[in-house]
Length: 233
Image (cartoon, rainbow, N blue to C red; front, side, top):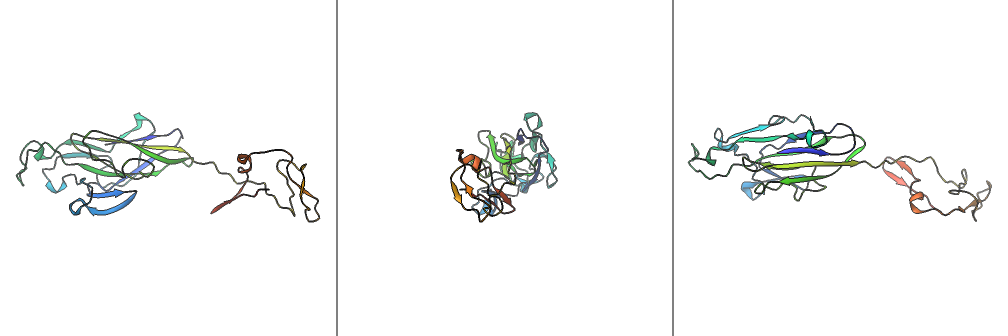
């Protein structure tokens, strides 16, 4: 299973892994605690219950290591976070303990991947998923703009490539221009239009005599921590 980043915004992109083979589905970006055995939709238990006959998986970072790791934008910077190097014993022969096999079907490994640290000028947009035929669909499915985190799967025969796509964050700037009929009788973009207010002794306030469009008006607002405000005449 491969994790990639697509972005033109410079900076460091870091991720964390979790939920290794925990058999728990990730639905719409939240935890779904319904195990597969109870009707849940997640076969990603890795065959861990068959140990030591459950094959070999190389995890990067190591399994249960939740520390951040860096993924550099572009194909050259992709990280293989799950490499299934040997299948479970029942893949090609009988399981030494439980006796079933061979079934030529390896157990699916699974892990949740979360973009945890991104550049200030970037924002998460969506996740693209490329899957081998036969692999379990990533969660949430289909992959899209709710896939941070993404739970993905792989086994000895089938893999998944997930690409986290980032775009420029909105460049919202506070504006220093404020119309106040008592202190700043400003008509945008000039004061040569018809009188619209007496100005309370400060002189008449006039409507702009120059046509302007909505996008120009909407560029002028004040920004507070919890809201944006816009005044128009």
